[in-house]
Length: 170
Image (cartoon, rainbow, N blue to C red):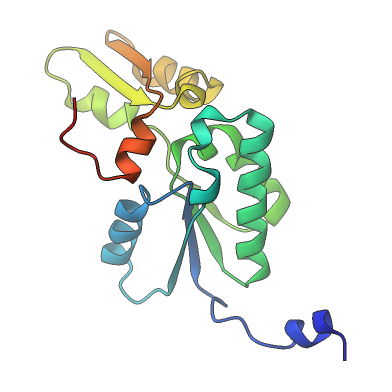
């Protein structure tokens, strides 16, 4: 029996789980929130740390990595996918939805809730360059930013600091 046939007859431990992925460990907070909201669901988390940060990569690279991870999760039999990465969301969520035909929940920059909570009328958004330059963020600013000042700042190196848990450096 060939290797591929043999492996396809073995049930995946991820069958029926919800797949969650990020370019690194930053999405673990999303995983915790999903666990709290859906305590009886099986979850599988993929940290694509070997290709992080996504935000400094080209759109083609981000789309390819999102599809690679998303398709792998689909092949494992997950029933849905959560993209816990703003950059992958704004660049490739639509493509992943089209290619996997699974429910895909994508975490986008929190501009809407920030606008609702601001007391000063100013909202600062720190994100990767790809995220702040995306059409998706421009759409969010247009939808929710009326009468507010929204400052978008690409932050090279921020993802690496988060991944290292570097919370106290300048």
